[in-house]
Amino acid sequence: MINGKIWLSSPTMHGEELEFVRQAFESNWVAPLGPNVTAFEDEMAAYIGVGHAAALVSGTAALHMSVKLAGIRPGDKVLCSDLTFSATVNPVSYEGGEQVFIDSEPKTWNMDPAALEKAFEKYPDAKAVISANLYGTPAMLDEIRSLCSAHGAVFIEDAAESIASTYKGRETGTFGKYGCLSFNGNKLITTSGGGMFLSDDEEAVKKVRFWSTQSREPYPWYQHREIGYNYRMSNIVAGIGRGQLLHIEEHKAAKQAIYRRYREAFRDLPVQMNPYDEQNSDPNFWLSCMTLDKGVKTTPEEIRLKLNEKNIESRPIWKPMHLQPVFADRDFITAADSPEQSLGADIFARGLCLPSDIKMTEEEQGTVIDVIRGTLR
Image (cartoon, rainbow, N blue to C red; front, top):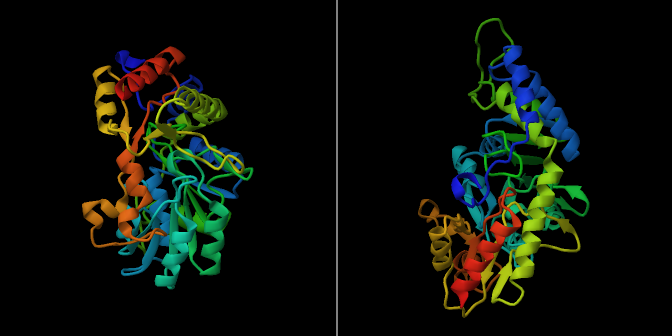
């Protein structure tokens, strides 16, 4: 591993990326947009199986554009995944909306449809739902989509962590009215930084491209009727993405192998791996995670520190959004008897994200496993 460190999840480059970047340099397409951007959008849309795509500077930008398209205005309620990274929900605040956080269910750790139904009963005018596919594991997407349809809410699927994952044979990022991908440096494939907005609605994608290029009107001079954003991807980083896309299935297979080795190694320990719907989903296992069984005296933080002593990177599970100080005034809905029984909070307290770098050798993963086994004795 780089500098002798076993990383949580770092970029894996192959060489084809450099060829696409070289073409950009030789043609002097180093400014935003260009042939690589157009080709990356087309290639990604074809891979995912969606009608149209807009390449942007980040997955957060894609989520922001989705929230804006959903018509969120100040005070509007948006029902959001609770156990996720803050980027999933921050764009609601960009448009003045108010997040309502929805607890997880135990089968996938993702948004609980039962809690979502309770939230719609309390907030029947909620305009949108943002559901994330945590750590690459698809949520109960059909159930969530059906509830959104029944209540007239726009379903925004945050597939930032789940590119190449499938649910009932269908790629994630295609279940919502709008889908969002991330190509951050630690994701399954990367453009260094970048993201993509997905939709079968061609007009929505055109609108995202318009807003993301400063809402510039088609005049010889710079004219603007709407507030715009500098969100479009550059031709250089799109070239990296095109080279990475050639290896996406290879990366997914490597992540899945890492998950399986952990699961097998922990069978005799008071440890559970992050769950998934084995009948309906095929996760990319972007990050392999573990939870300690209740009653185990060792804490996830003790394990993290022991791994760190060996130059091994691990990370706590995402801290639920309803526990974040910035969202202290937001509502939280759970299907449990009381908010104190939050499943997401329990997973956070007992969980740890394990090294899931596809450059990690089996021997190096064995070292990770040995440290964990030794800490639990």
